Length: 166
Image (cartoon, rainbow, N blue to C red; front, side, top):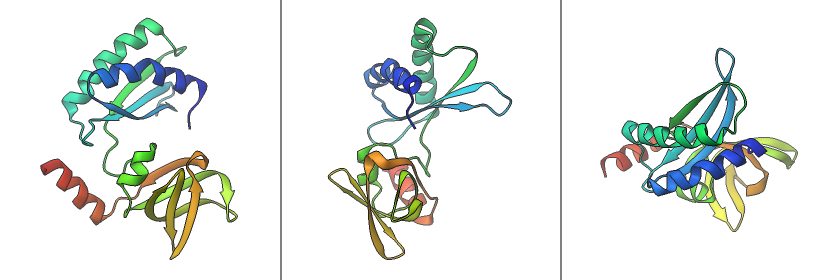
């Protein structure tokens, strides 16, 4: 979920990522495993790939901006990564591109009395995310999606393998 801090960081690092040929997928602040904070930045190339070398390059450039602007009080760890196979769905284009795959959703406001859904992502219609939940079509406003993430399945692994080789 975006906060004033993550919005500010996004505004700082997105132009750098774009200039290097990457798209931001998610910017998040999280608690670290041993205390402290972790700034997680997920990015990818427009074709959906992201190599370790890409993460290193982006991390170096982002570090410079963050050191100069200093938006985070206290110590933190910068983590730059690809979204991975079972990726978070954060952008409208993600919900369209991954139609036909199983996903989990957490909503800000309940729909049909529920805030959590697991179902087949059917895609987008205007700003409505369409999900098949146990044979029933559920529509959720994109603005109501707090978190969404693909579920690791054989079909998803096949798609990821096809993207990596093709």
